[in-house]
Length: 371
Ligand SMILES: CNc1nc2c(CC[C@H]3O[C@@H](OC)[C@H](O)[C@@H]3OC)c3nc(N)[nH]c(=O)c3cc2[nH]1
Ligand SMILES: [Zn+2]
Image (cartoon, rainbow, N blue to C red; front, side, top):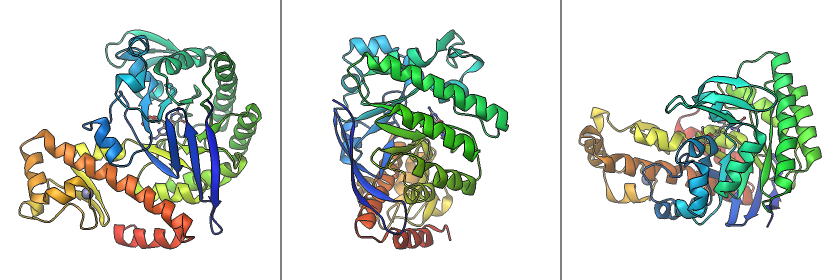
């Protein structure tokens, strides 16, 4: 069964839209924030907790799962859904980004990338076909084409040849996928920070007719206004009736800016990574729970939140847990941070429905301290 996208509403005062994605493991309302479960787990959470928090789809990572425990083992276990006991949609990245950001001694060629594992230094190769083989073995509902996330900054020449190789790799991924019953392969637009290259990449990928498209090569350290400008230029080049996924974006302000520019899906390790370090996202900005000022603060993490952590525990208690290194501390801040972003996207969907997204953004920014 293929990936289907229904465009339910388009905003009048921005490119924001409401949609619904149908996958073999269920439906996803967009715009959506997708929690990251890189190694087959959303860190510190059980799948039941992730579901109760309102997550509709989670991400996993081809590079990590290929290295450990190996995609063949997961395939023998019945696929990733079964292995990790998550019976809802899963999206897997293609491994390209992690090869470049995690491993060293990489050699890139037309065939693919040779690299050494960041775990034990063993030599490996992943190319378009290998990435498809791994993702098929994992059985994810949405798979990403094998691409090169062009580093930032890169010259025009490097960005051009990198984008053109990503396009050739996309063709090979599409080719490989043809012989499988899976239909959830998304193309990834590259082109660095250059509009003409972004346009070329988008046109070539749309020509290949994917069920969805990601905007890659962003959230790689470029200035926010540059990302917004490139996004504003790129999303209109993508088909209206297909989902658009901005990779690696997840702080509240970026989520608003992405949705307003026509993005339907976003992912980020930030909320869970920040949570484990004791940084809490609240309606009034970030809060570092270890701070001494919370020692006797018996109020909840976020006055406006009704999550399990905010309902049952105080800042003082959670600070105590972090101070003595108790695991429950990271679990409670993770529950809260995930709920905060999932709830934010729910509120954004409501605001689009009621044609008041820009007002909601202003209101949120003022309280959060962005303005
Ligand atoms: C953080 N900024 C950022 N992340 C990015 C990722 C990883 C997301 C993936 O990596 C993990 O999070 C780091 C998540 O697991 C996610 O999985 C889909 C990208 N992946 C690919 N294939 N191509 C890109 O151009 C790309 C750009 C990114 N920019
Ligand atoms: Zn909360």
